[in-house]
Amino acid sequence: MSEPARGWILAAPSSNAGKTLVSAALLRLLQRPTGGGKAATPYKVGPDYIDPGFLSAAAGTVCRNLDPWAMSSGRIGQLLSQSGNYFLIEGVMGLFDGAVSGDGSTADLAADLGLPVVLVINTKGQGASVAAVAQGFVNFRDDVNVAGVILTQVASPRHRKLLVDACAANNIRIFGILAADPALTLRARHLGLVQAAERQDLDVLLDHAADVLARELDLAALLAIAAAPSVRHSSPPPAIPPLGQNIAVASDIAFGFCYPHVLDDWRQKGAAISFFSPLTDQGPAIDADAVYLPGGYPELHAGTLAANGTFLEGLRHAADRGAVVLGECGGYMVLGQGVVEEDGSHRAMAGLLNLETSFAKRKLHLGYRQMTLRAAGVLGPSGAEYRGHEFHYASIVREEGDSLYTVRDALGEQEHAVGLRTGNIMGSFIHLIDMDQS
Image 1 (cartoon, rainbow, N blue to C red):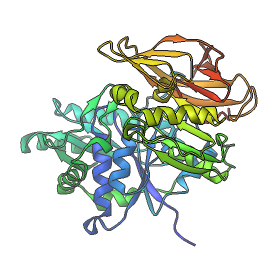
Image 2: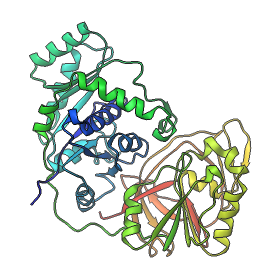
Image 3: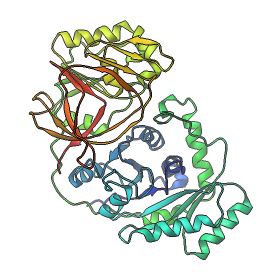
Image 4: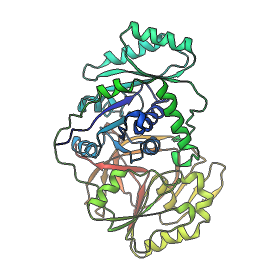
């Protein structure tokens, strides 16, 4: 019998600590002969699409999401069972931060799975205070094992000594040190980091990050603390039903926000998945009986998409022949009549829903959502319940017609109707994550 997979969680006191860069560097390093050839399967905590792109590229295999708020323990166990000998889980936000309901944090996942946490701390502007931060995280919850730290943005040998001495005096174990380096920059925009697929220098960046981390990393110590997860054995929850038997999925840098486990579930149910690129003016396969437009950054490419007649006509023809069309977030915007760009320019879209959206009137919409399907259809019977997430800056100028979901926030409050449904065409700003098993 093979040994169970073992791994760690890399977390941080807050966002922007460098945990994605450190996670990617470690994943790339583990693949090398000098890293023992112990390639690790990557995972990302929470409803994140962008960080997994870097982790997938670094590891050479698909990164999947583990969401302790939106997923059951059975689902999380099912996804972890797909890892190899080692796995690495990158946390979300700060270690103890989760939904507004207070649950769903990286710490909750660490406690449930019994996995060690390595805390990535950005030391810029700090000296001995780093040890106080680490000590506070170590002692905050008895059921969470913060095994040590990896320090980033270490500016000089003098800075390094100050940090090391302070950690040693407070029994804080240092697993690694990442020196400050201007070449190690992950650029950001309004929904997070610039996507991995948009960086022509991605492999150079990942290799350089691995080189810098390798200079001061106790890899043997990290491997020694890697643990097998304490997964509760239960059946996986019912999957989100496939939209059809032949599902065409939009996939490029404008439509990149798609959870791998959703597509995996559809394949397991017998659906065939094909991909097309709206940005290169491709339409969905002509034999597709369903089209899925996931979220992404269509607002950054609205002019191109509006001019891509093959893509837009392909969507309309699919709708006319009775194919199911589902748009989420950015995909929902494209199904509407038009999108107003940041400079006020109006770009006509597919016109399949009575919807107008604007990126000129920016307002942040962010949070977990509990959704109830308002009418029976391919997604399930009326009253079917899901969990999802909303994260966008676009505003709705006009939204008229039958709503798709009734939603509540993570506290079960602020109930209202969202999305649109017209026959076989449907969408909303919410990304579906899983069926609700609460």
